[in-house]
Image (tube, rainbow, N blue to C red; front, top):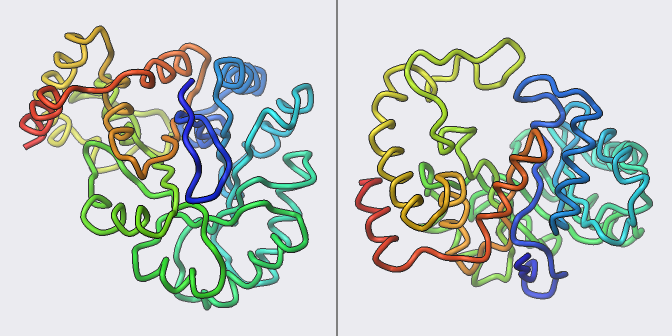
Length: 297
């Protein structure tokens, strides 16, 4: 497993991370035993970072149960406070996450998103206090833009940013990615497969079951799926020429960026985790990347 340093002075972690939103049931119900087996498969395959959040339904508790039989030092646990970013809630949410995860410290505790209703000074002061108290090792943010990160940095060091980033959503490349590289902030992309669009499995006519967050989303309507299908087929052909899958190409492409530390990929079962692992250890050539960009238009 390839590894990279998280930020300027952080720990070394695997370049593929396990995103826990799916095992919490956000993309359809998963039996707890299957979720635990998937987490164990991720650890056994060399993944060291597991990312969850207060808002990820049952995932923190499932992770806590899965890690109870494992060496805690083998896993870098990242979680997030979600929704309410008042000082009181940041503190109480951290305590709840510590209990659910069955750990004495959260390796990376992140602010899940920007909410103007809560002063960033209050939020980041609370995060800094948690770090001083030894309840979290590093502080990060998620879904912040450059100006928001600047405001947060004025209060507390930021080890990482977790932005949405995929071949179908490259908005961070213009300003956010260069800023993080200059400031020594590690990037942990979430949704690298665009909620499954970059698996190539979904075609016009597909319908998601109730309980799956993707049901009813415009990006999965027949018109958009029809528009994307030729591009996805072309990308899959580029991947096959290298003996890889579309999924592996989509993840590996993000690792071309030096500022990207670890790509967070959600897995529902061990076979998906195994496919994700195949995204590291190789890179697209410059010629192949040029062809990818031509396809994406």
